[in-house]
Image (tube, rainbow, N blue to C red; front, side, top):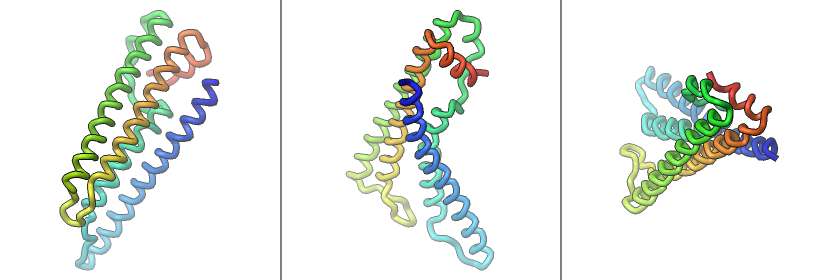
Length: 173
């Protein structure tokens, strides 16, 4: 059961990982084109604004993917000194606290989305509305919070599951 949920959730996070990569590729292409055009005396209007928005989407959409691949840094050097149950309870509680913070950031981004829609805030040069980007941030932070919550569930399950304990501890340094 855990493996099926894990696979499905990893697939969903993988979609956001692809979005993150596409945003980075977009930044690379845009900056390359802008540099080439500048050699001939022109420029890409709003290149900085577009780059800024693409990088924002890239960072936030990559968070859940990185968590699903256990790529985030966790300070676990003291956990090895504790008995197995305590080790995984502490790690699970750390994941729960991180999940709560992610949901709080998602709520803040959602609130910012509503404010931005109401005030019609836009970028300076191209007048791109900002609210869709805050909405993307909110969705990505919810997914990141869910990824952390899932990691907490797996940590608590690892108290009694040897294979899961090995998998989780494999990412600890």
